[in-house]
Image (cartoon, rainbow, N blue to C red; front, top):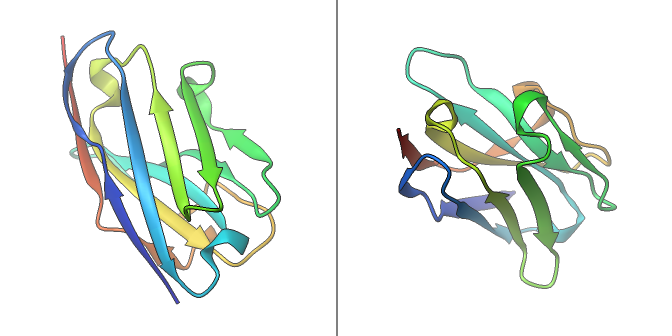
Length: 123
């Protein structure tokens, strides 16, 4: 099993930046595919970006060009660098992991989940 702990959330003004981190521990997390999801109040949890076991990345919908996902296998840590934040980027951000090779945008693509870190963007 893999344990995931997110950090780096906070409150910023529109146009600002944040970097989220997800520390993974347990059985060989460096070989896992991982992803970031977010959940805004009253909305379903949605995929933001993911990285496959071999480093291939995918970005979903409106975050393309402003968010960057990366994974440091030596530190067993997943990152999400977010720039030009907008109020609609607000929500709880979750890290997820799976022992599959490729990553996806569906919740069912991942076995393991963190507890989340809150991001609030004010206008």
